Image 1 (cartoon, rainbow, N blue to C red):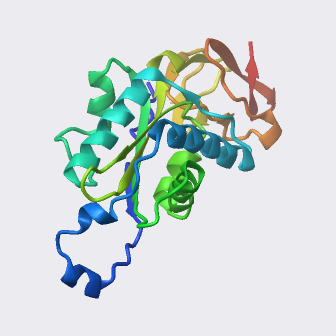
Image 2 (cartoon, rainbow, N blue to C red):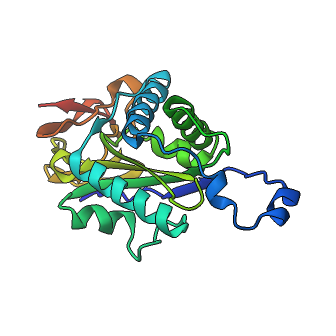
Length: 253
């Protein structure tokens, strides 16, 4: 059985520039600096659109929103906004534990965090773009947004009631229901080694092996050329056959 690991969670903090002279004159003026509240749902919609634009630019399919992931992201955005603690375990739980608590049975989960502040405030589009630009400039966040195997997303944006900072959470997922299950059978009289998602497996003559994988990948035997490799589909059955003396290839049954 091949399982895809939980992806790495990531967060970034955009550098905030403050005038020390102003702060020294008025230590209690944080409320005056706080931004005028905006409708965070509008920001969430723009984050979704911009995330999918970014994926399209990289030849990846769009992510679909999922209610339980949205609920998780909004809860955690509100939590970090109220606490000011921008950590993936700020509430004592991991991203995987949070979505599981809300009934999401995952194959893959990843999470991005960020916060933004401007004393002059933001439009929903500008705030969303700041989040996406920050994430796309960070290798770990970028990898999460461009992970080919994730299919669903939840987005939460919340404002701090005291500092005026806006916090954003992206939760990426692939549900267990989208696990790829397939079978490989060695039809030859020799032991053949094949590779799937960087794992090499030796399969004896006339033997078969069932696979479960959270992420798609290429199935190839050691002697297979690029065009002879197969990309298993859920429910697929594949045979290893001898194409010529000592040359093997993978075929779909």
